[in-house]
Length: 272
Image (cartoon, rainbow, N blue to C red; front, top):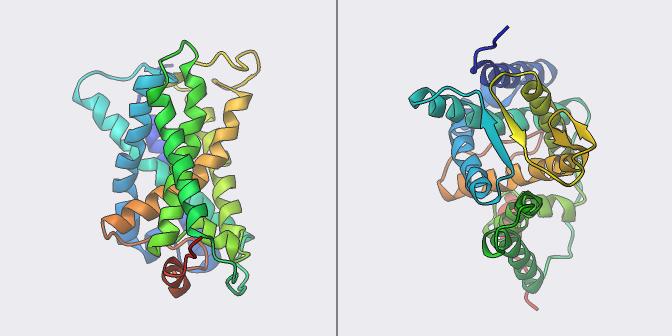
């Protein structure tokens, strides 16, 4: 039986809402119910945060889509799907934090990163994002997509730290690794769930990969699943940066709101 093309986006929307309700039942507050404006902007920003990956795909040809309707309905369906990505990732991470990844209150490390170290990491992120564009296109260009998977994380998270926004690097220095773990697991789970939905859909996308193509889970080779946990971390860094840039309400994951120490830390980065 043919399945309507919108069922995948509908399933992702329902998943995000169901997880939000689960978080609320566990903790008495959730992103949607406690921060409805932040949730709305999270969905809006999600649509635009995914577009750079679509642009890189035009260059690298890592995947293609089939079975989608033509015309305006195609773009409406894709936009709806993109708007579900960040809400699903953040809601899943929030549920993990609610049921077993609670933050421990620990003093901030006195070992502040040197400016040179921050610049080095930002430069590494910039290089990861530039190489897929600068290197001549290859028949196996999709292999370079892994660089994009890490590039935005390396570029934006150090900038978040310096600018006084929520930063995973700051979490790590503070001995507070639970948000990192929850986001990585969220990326892995949501990636696997998306692949499962995609596998049985009529309107779907196909990965084009030579590396490990003989060993697949659903439509992707096993090696490609390594990118999903990184994407979970990267999604947080991208949202924190652009939400701060646009002065949008932050999304507070778990039990930790944007702390004053986040802002103080950005002003105490050392100099080499």
